[in-house]
Length: 353
Image 1 (cartoon, one colour):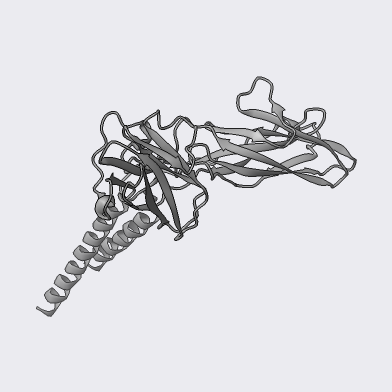
Image 2 (cartoon, rainbow, N blue to C red):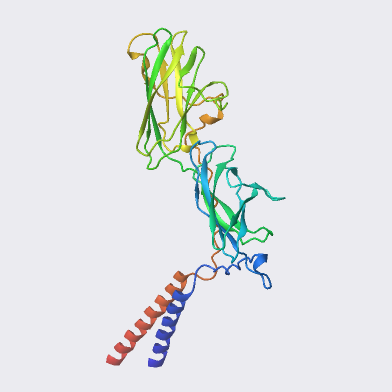
């Protein structure tokens, strides 16, 4: 009687331990690193190396840009010219710096540098990377790479660096309008960055109906308003700070409704980014703000709903789950342990009887 009971308990314990040791997700085979042709057997290791820092794009929200610093090092024992090969991802472009020329036959690739470097010496090149996406994108990340190269064309393996597009944030708009006096009126605006980080710039769009024209500040000539109003570009705004300014308009022909909104609209996660003001002649009550009407089909592309999502970064593919799960093994082990305990209790009672 004792031997079967011991065997049952030992078997249950073995099942429990094996369940705990069994992985639930199939492991991926380790990736085999790609070896540069210049470092294969029989070839000397490259002596010109290049490394780049992370890039943060900012400023103009339609085409944000940011500095890229590339350090080129001569690890050889003699002076040599140090070049580097730069590759940028889709929707990123090189606009300035680095003595660069387009790479032969490779899209979005440049060969830069070429200064003479002493043995053990280095040089840092400063370039500018700009977003070339057709529409503003926020909260995404891209990857570029640099690789050192000597005068003979022998290159080191590429080293990646990250490019961060601006994040989405919250920007609140408040506005009031004074009465129209002698064909002119002033709208007072307060734009508050209620987010936690600085933004490099934003724009205020003013939809001007017939009889209304913005006289100051100056309107942008970007063409994004498509002839239906004025786009006013504003500069950097720190997190928690408020940008207060006046917009002056010429107004004729009676009461007018003027809509104002912050752009690009897909950057902002809050709803209070748009107001509509009524311009009336005389009296102090002519500048009350009203709830912004829904956008009509003629509204330009920059007036899309403020909740439009930014382009999401691609998600990593999840490995498939295989085999019996740990929970199943655990339940089997617990059942066997309970059965063994019950048999022991039954044996003792039989012995007492």
